Length: 203
Image 1 (cartoon, rainbow, N blue to C red):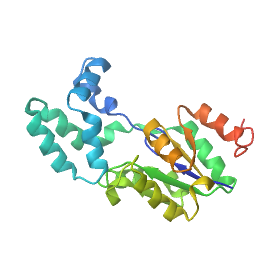
Image 2: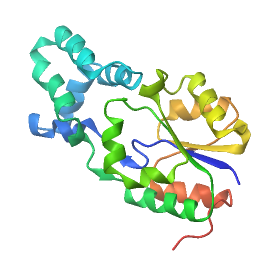
Image 3: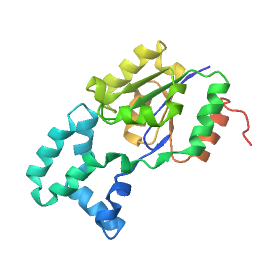
């Protein structure tokens, strides 16, 4: 059996800043424009790498003072960006657990916000270990975080299957020898797992 390593956000946990910012804008297009203007993805990655939220908010608010209230909102109302679990993927995870597959998680996540997820989602207990980027100061797709994951798993990369919704993260893992699945939807994941004979036909 291969060890199966899951990303969390976008794979098992439904996360999107659009959900948090919907009350502040008239359309999804306006949200996209705002996120692009402040370079949200790169800014948020710094929190995933261990920077305190308060520091991140202060830095970005100084750069974009006219958006300070929106930047603070992401910190103060962060949990509004997480409506719940992705149930169809969760069903696959539970089936893999029942079948005896070793399950791990590797996630880019703030060390401040991940405890909220541990309290909220009981299914996180299904993993033998969860490596959280913000707790170690490394983020995907840095090869160093995959090497640390392999140390935790205790197996070589070719004996591990890595599942992530980010193509950059997938490509980095592939170059290190992992078997990979670029997550696009639960149905696609199920098909890929069946193709590898990891899952039998699901109802």
